[in-house]
Image (cartoon, rainbow, N blue to C red; front, side, top):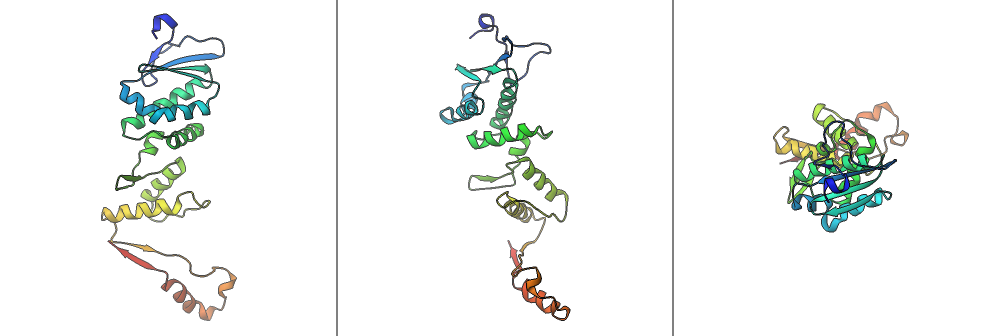
Length: 223
């Protein structure tokens, strides 16, 4: 596949000279990604090309052709630049040692669709804790913002649907602070009874009630 033979412009990491465009038909566009090595290409396309297959499912109107260290992308002019941006981010993740999987690509696609000013590579490689080969890190822009807020503030209130990582990330940050000797202990608390009218409303019993409720559910954790 040569530039002279088919009119396609080669690029590396999505870069090209100003004013230079690939050969394309009206409404269609073709780009060629030139990987630095076969290893980089294999890591970018995923094990058994599973990452490439995921992208093909996300963009069914786009054709992908692999030859040597090149990946040709042809399709609607609106889709091809998005895919090129996606591969730029993929290459950045590969350079930092991230294994490219469909789950990672789904996170990338979601971030790129939000058109956030934050760099997706910076979000997905922001390590909090690492243990036994596993690393805890934000998986979404909101989670990254949450982690940044914990770093910047003394008290943080996390509000959101269940399963979005509020407690998980907060505990990871707490353990990180303990390991780095920023704190000397972690205190876990939770309400043991209903915090509404069911707990009673007699002022004379407030101190007794709060001592009985909070005293037994405060657990100091030391290193």
